[in-house]
Image (tube, rainbow, N blue to C red):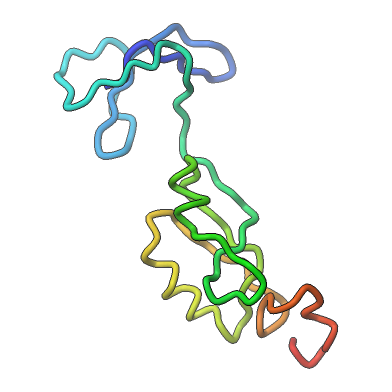
Length: 129
């Protein structure tokens, strides 16, 4: 249970208790059930739904760069990331297999280039699309 937490919507709701069960909010208000763990937020912190980062690059085989989905995702409060075109038609299946192990939900936008993002100017050679 979390005690003394401000729940904010379009307006402030008075300090309240939040019960979290299996990673989801189970109850709000005066909670009488016992908790395995109690966290006192003292009104200084926020509780929110998971965030979505809609522009990441997390294909581990990218020759340019990539981030680990869980280090930019779950570890920072982001529950879902969307890879912005690191993969093309040639390697989307590989991307899918490699990202299934992440605790963070990973989605991808398919690059217009069939080989994905392999260089800063990957469309300069139009044979790659």
